[in-house]
Length: 265
Image 1 (spheres, helix red, strand yellow):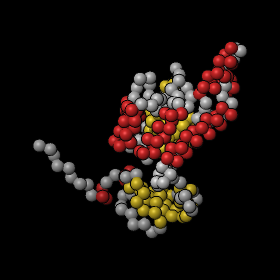
Image 2 (tube, rainbow, N blue to C red):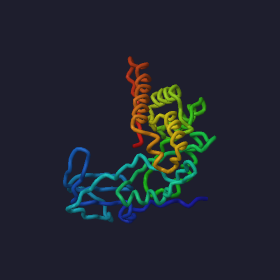
Image 3 (cartoon, helix red, strand yellow):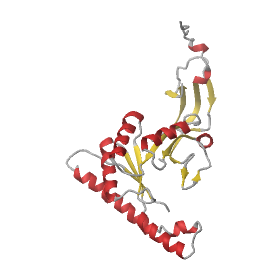
Image 4 (cartoon, rainbow, N blue to C red):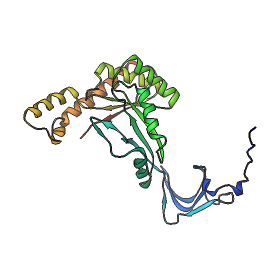
């Protein structure tokens, strides 16, 4: 038989769950105002002056200071294994550093290993992160190919796991072609998800790399030389044209496609 749990009176509850920040300059998206903020269980409950606050609340005097929302870093790579390397920061040290700098939410990238599905990659990253993160976090999911199974995984990730952004690549061994990019954009539109694109012309980069290696250029400087600006610009333009064609098909309906492009400089 289970033991009944008694409700603790609010004045005896831990003050760690209740916080009052007084006399600060509150920074919002549209203005800066002087006021107080009452927070309970990590949620802002009241904002203004002369707030009615329960007893036992911990108070911080922020007079002469700005009180700002925590930052959101939407592009991190913790415990990222790529091309025989691994990023030095794990989810603990990376998010601990983020909080020290005022960033309270990060969004990392779940990148599938060879033969791993997007859905499995998501679960792999959750196992890596859940026991280590010091702040809120989310995951973009990378699509390293296109198939009916990838499409089904996207459905499940959006419906059951709250994933709403997917990243595709126009270069590297796992690049998608234009038709696959079109299909992925189209499915993102249907799901209401954001499509992200690493936009570089992968075929040209391969040819440039071959020429550089033949000339004996094998150091890190070859990375930049192999992908000049116009190689990025062409891919960015092509991705935009493809996205526009996806929208054009639905021009008589109220539909939108959001695409984030990454050009590496």
